[in-house]
Image (cartoon, rainbow, N blue to C red):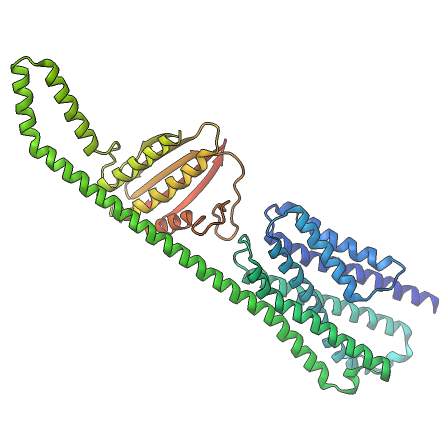
Length: 458
């Protein structure tokens, strides 16, 4: 008898470690998706596993509820220490994982209790202790695998539903997302207490006395799990709508900016027409001054003509008046900030690429380049364009210093600024590129950020 008891103990220990390891893996998967430095995410899962192992071997008896709460708190405390930002989101992750862990475990236990009569009816099992041991081992193994499958599936659904993993979370948003997890965990604790109280007073499980309660509990646990995931989906849908509104607002602002550029082009053309109209008179005046040998007055008159022409004609000649104005204004802005601005941009005449769309590309790309170059030791921006047959490539590169993080969902760099509108410029650039069956590519090398925009001419 002593020998089989040892085997029971060995199996129980192994399955405990298996459960702790599988839960730690789910914890790691959840934390990894929300962390910037993913290579360090394993420490979060390790913290959970070590905490549960220590609590398993300490001589004091504590409830499973408190033990798993300590494990989750330890894991997400490590996550916070690794990346001390967006605390609200980490609180949401910790509370949600705690609820998912308990709900998946409760569903597994309920299903296991429902299957109890099936195992007890196996012929001759009660008279064979080794048969009982084998059934015990298989049942525990199936239960733990089911628990892991339910928990892993819930985590995967949560990760898929939670789209904006790098976005900050406000306290109001935390409250909205925290309530389902908190209520599910507390209700589970209340139900477990009632079940334990019933068993202590009657000596029987409530599921044995009232079989329908097991299915009622299972339904409740499933609804609780779905409520957590549903609220997350609704929250992310609202975030998606907010992002779309930001993009539309930014696009509207850029449209107004383009209108201003067009108005500036019209003013320049008006000045040029005035110069052209007066050019005959200017030449006649210069001729008379030279004939009279009034060299000084002629030189001054010629100097004033050149200034007027320079004011009327943009400093950059790209092949289109709208892009001329944009590039000239951006060059002036760069020079005021002490940034070296080199431009070899040529408008793709006859390509079918709209000047309005190119304006969006140039405004967004150069604005980002100006912001990125400012922090570098030798700030510089270079703009190049290439065309071969129906392919048109626009390249904007700038010096930069520091670290650039990328969004896993769309592959675009994350903005370091949290104000509305930041981080949407590249998304708008990509949207315009895809309109012309193209795309964007970003490369980082030797402290230089290069954005390549490919457009296919129509």
